Amino acid sequence: MSVRPVGPSDIPAFHAVMMAAGMDPRSSWNRTTPADLERSLFSPGAGGFLAYGEGEEVLGCVGYRPDGEATLTLNKLATRPGSRGQGVGRRLVREVEHAARIGGYERVLLAVSQYNLEVLPFYERLGYRSVDERYAHAHPASPPPVVLVKELADV
Image (cartoon, rainbow, N blue to C red):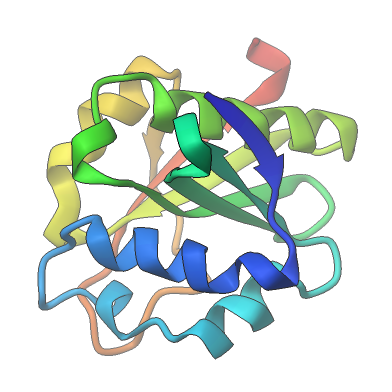
């Protein structure tokens, strides 16, 4: 597996992985468009990564964006169902954490949809803990997400 930063020409592949991930149909995730991704991934300080398997097959994706001086928010983590359990998600999360450290951020924050709570143990194994914070980017038509944080100084 290799991981590379996402570029503008990668938007269709990034979007395809998100849509293949199998998110609950009620989630706002399913309404994400390629234009939304372009705005999110290429705003100031933002970015993302794609994980590739053999034959340049895209196995997973993740995005990130700054939220203040101390916080880098991880978002849009998705893996193709057939590549789960192979360390793709873990590797992508580690890439975002590395970007946060290089950028001087103190923590990585993420939000888990109420429709996707089965992923909480995955993040907890990676050192993320639930916090009582409001998620600034929550979709107003969706239930409030569970907010998780990893303090980078603790690592």
